[in-house]
Structure formats: C-alpha cells, structure tokens
Amino acid sequence: MHPVLARFLDPDAARDTLRKLEAGEPLEGPEPLFAAAAQAHPEQRAVLTGSRTARHLSSDTQAALVLLSAHAAVRALAEDARLGPAVARARAALGTEGASDEETDAFIASILLEEAFGYDDEGADFDADFVLETLGEVPALASLSRERVDGLVDTYAREGSTPEARTLRERMARALVNAAWEDGPAPINPEHVESVVEGELEGQDEQAQGLALAALVGWLQTLAREGLVGPSRLVRLRAQLGDDDA
Image 1 (tube, rainbow, N blue to C red):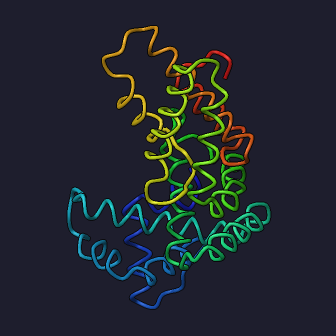
Image 2 (image 1 turned 45 degrees about the horizontal axis):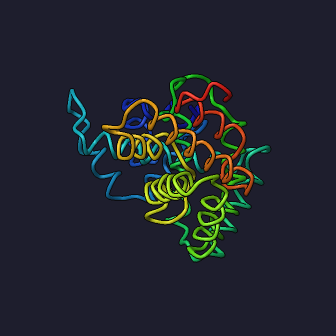
C-alpha cells in the first residue's frame, strides 16, 4: 500500500488535515497532497467533514475517505522520481484517447487501490515494481480498439487443435474481455478473473473445469505477449487460477 494512501485512510489524519485546511494552518509532509485532493472533490470533502463526530464511519464516509486518500497518493506518484515518468506516459496515452483529467486520475487511483487491496498480501509494503509495471501497461490498453480485441480473440481461438478446443478458447477469451473491458480497456485484475471462473465453470465436472482454466491461462499468456498484461500481473493471475507453473 502506498504510504500516502495508508496515512490518510486513518480518518483522524484525514480529518485533521481538513481542519488545518479550513483554519488556514500550515500543512506538513503529505498533507498538501490530501488537501489538494479534497479541494478537487468537494462532494467527498463535505461528506468527510460532516462525519467528524461519528464514532463509526458510514459507507458513504468510508467511500469518501478511500477516494480522497487514493487521489492524494496519485498526486504523490507524480512527484516520485521513479514512478513519475511512468505516470506521465500513462496520462499522455489516456489523454490521447480522449480521457479527461478526472478520468485519468480515477484510472491511476484504481491501480493504487488494486495494489493495496487486490491480492492476498494486501497491507504489505508498497509494491512499487508492480505499480510501475501496471503503469507500463496503460499505453497499450489505452490504444486498444474493439477491432483489435476481436482479432486477438479470433487468432487465439483458431490456434485450438480441435473444433471443441477452438470453441472453448473463444468462449473463455470472450468471457474475460467482457468482464474486464466492458467499460473500456483496463488492467485485468483478480475480480475479473473470479467473475469468469464463477460464470463459466459452475456446474462443470473436474475435467471440463481443467480444460476451461487452461484455455483462460492461455488467453492471459496471449495478452501478456501483446503487452496488455505485465509479467508480475500474469504470475499473480495464474496463481489465482491454481496454475502450478505460475
């Protein structure tokens, strides 16, 4: 988890920063980043400010806290000597494809939230390598067209050795595309894979499940060769599927 995200997920730290902002007091350390995120998202700022006396956070307050903390961390990335250039390239790629600044911020924030909460090692030290790799996927994802996706699926399906294998390959590839990219290309994450497994393998016998999982792993490997899934992401997703070779 990024340290700025971790710091401001503490509601006391977040509220104290907002108090300083409203009082005009000096902000220290990463507090200006959180203050800037709050100023850019007045609705979430108001929700968090209005919850100051609550002993337990409501779902709306929790959502506001996560959003503001993640966007503060996005601002920190831009200042990071190692990650900043990758952030800039990702922003440029998304902007070229028509994404607004707000949409781009949300996209990068989702990467940080995935790193923080998307895997079994959540809460561990910040995995800068994984975030750097994921940012590197963004230009290829941003330029991905429906026509290219269809072409990749068709090519992958045709590589099946039998008609049944070709049908299965196409079904599993389409299922993952629909789960991950229904709202536009984005990094494929464990939730997407879990959705495919639940939707496509339920009620099948062990042999059929094994064939379907192999087809899904093969599709992930195809996407990796195309630069749409990074090496570390591929290892994590294959491990999620129980692939012994991950």
